[in-house]
Length: 292
Ligand SMILES: [Zn+2]
Image: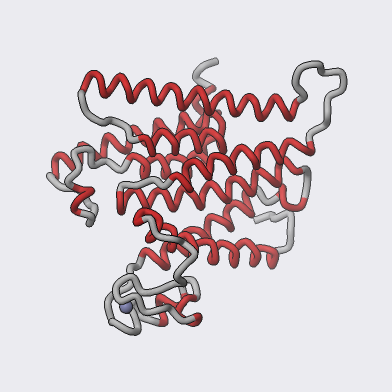
């Protein structure tokens, strides 16, 4: 591995990833219930006993407690340490993969690294919230989309200003271009959703899925979002076929599992988005060679 910076600097994204993973657990558990993610502090979801500082160390505490609450002895989900580990690994991956941006070139590369890091965090959260509760909170979809556009705009600041342009400069064009795709993608999905409802007389895609796709477009642009969406459709259809064969879904939430449309499309879209960040450009390049 040939890093453009000393290895110890990876401690920073690793620690930040653990802390952000810990906070993501709070969001995943509380947001679908409409609870505050700030107050009260961490507590056992079973018996509401406050969690002490030493019991709140990412990953480590779950093992120290042997996966059980100190007060009520009820099991603590393995989801907690796994989310912390996943977010930590994602932050490390982004630091190494896009890390040149932190120490090298310009604001656009640095902002790309930050936006991929943030997008992965949002997607891991959305994946689990849709699978557990069938919900995609606006704070993650709409709030995330806004952050995506702001980070893109911040990244264009370092680009050279082109003199003599009458209408829009390069930074303005990049941001307007992205906003245009967001509007187009959202409008197309709303139209598809409306037609589906007219023809089938039932809900196809949820509004949350539309907002989440718009959020992906804000971060990734059109092509990588289309790739993520296509991957989600393929895997989602395979999952739906499997569930139909098996006769029940995996979710422990009975109310959600009994819903007619029991495919957590947002979860598959999240997986598609993560794949698009990691290997999306390679897949697109491979696909483009057939078009020549
Ligand atoms: Zn407890």
